[in-house]
Image (cartoon, rainbow over all chains, first blue to last red; front, side, top):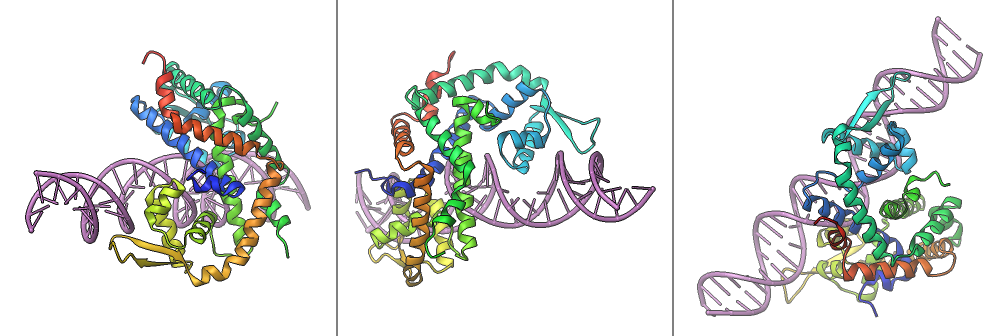
Length: 161
Length: 161
DNA sequence: TAGATTTGCGTAACCAGTTACATATATTAT
DNA sequence: ATAATATATGTAACTGGTTACGCAAATCTA
């Protein structure tokens, strides 16, 4: 028997375990960057990828694409701007919007960062046993959540409603 | 093709998706409790379960059992105390320790809470398609992480080290 | 039995997300 | 053309975790 109470809890322990796993990845990635004297942060990866692919994007576009709230993106981007990785220019058509893009510094650093990200991807492949079963199961869960989310299902399943 | 960039990112998107999922469960559970006029919070579930099973525990014991840091437990328990769900008594053998236990109020509320938790468990079973494949894959990942964690593997796999 | 070390708990500052609200600009409708 | 509405961004306060540090009590050691 495991001495891990969350595992012992079965289904009910899943949410806690997801949180633990997610935190572990975030903190360890942060430590990795610090160890390698890199001033970038874990979740910047997805912003870099996105701005490489799309050149220019607004806060709202990024928030929608990553399915995060816009204040989350504002915070992220502000820090990236402060460290000189992202430039912004006001949209000529719409004065509310900022078009965001990778700075020259960011583009210069990309080859080094790419090495880190490749190492991260390989490490993940190792951890998943070189198969996509976990990814596939998570995909199914996400699809299921899209149909009817956790709260909706709990409400429906509560007896004596 | 999905319009979800994290999915598009493949392995590299996994950590972001875990975070998203974990957050979704936490926020939706919190909303559920609020909707049902319950003043308890999502992660109290595991404390309730633990103190039902073990009667009395210290902060450090709880932190070890749940694999969380002790300040996390201190915060949790302080709020549970403030709302009257947990009582504490100083250990007679060791004046540093507090023995924590469920209050009378907590025990009275247990039947109602149990209904909520049952609904949550059923909802999770639904979301997982009434099988433990996701749980199993997560277990494998946890085991793998215990052997050598993400950061260690990234360091090892980084070329030109 | 005194000094060093370890242990248990607490606090502060941080991180990465959220919701709720504010404000400025654009757009739509009358 | 103006009023109402919608959209883009920003800010504040919260949540639930972390690490780093401090202090007091207990334990070990010489």
